[in-house]
Amino acid sequence: MLYDPWAHQGDIGAVQALPIGAERREAWRKLNMEIGRKNRVAIDGCNAMFAVLDGTDVDSGTAAEIGYGFARGIPILGYRSDFRLTGDNEGGTINPQVEYFIRASGGDIITSLNGLPGAIAKLKK
Image 1 (cartoon, one colour):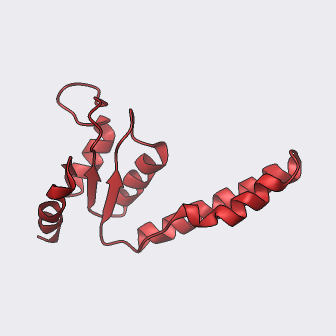
Image 2 (cartoon, one colour):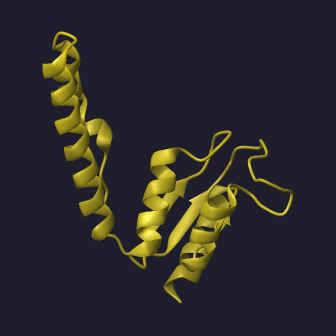
């Protein structure tokens, strides 16, 4: 199942158009919860996850999704094409906890989309 939080652009625009204040904050809170709920439902419906790990550190939302997916027993593939170092030491590719959850789920971290077919094949075993 795929969930695209950017599909909420119309909702986001409506909230941004509200005057700054309590009503706008409450509208953001409601929209944030709806986006989070839809994301959870999408993860609950997955057989596997594909997480983009680029950046100087893994996006906090992506890290949360990885942790939730792991807790639900979903295998996770990570993709990092970013050449910058982001692990806590030279033995890791990314944050140790994020890397642990991906690898312990039965998944792997690939650095090229050419590695995707092989990584998917390993998940199916």
